Image 1 (cartoon, rainbow, N blue to C red):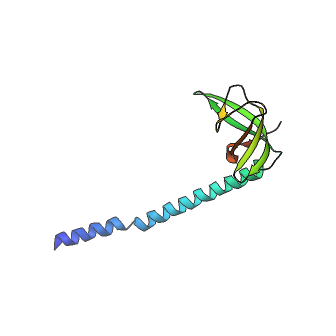
Image 2 (cartoon, helix red, strand yellow):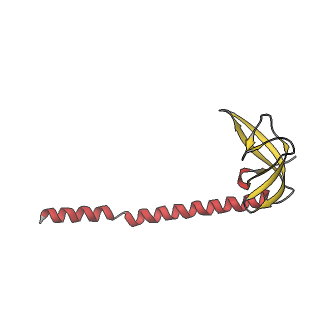
Image 3 (cartoon, helix red, strand yellow):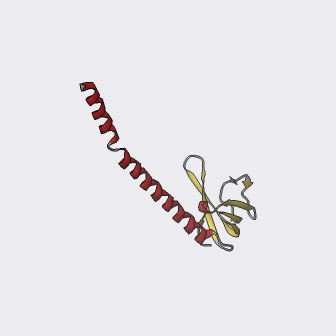
Length: 117
């Protein structure tokens, strides 16, 4: 009889925090989704329109960073087509496209930020 009561006590103690833990994880997931939606909305508003001048940071090696710049030629949902005007200091490749002056490439709009000429 004591073993059965001990087992039931352990079972009750183990389940007491379960619904709250699941609730916390659900709230965190909803907050992450809201942040992602906000980032997507802001990216589309800032760089998701033709004529916008945009920049993208690329890493070179371990510690070196380089910037490429271009103009948005076309926007299609979450992707933009950028015409490169400044290919940066180092040779780069983005989505299989060699980055050179005048090159056109499709990329995710959240990878780019607005910048000034």
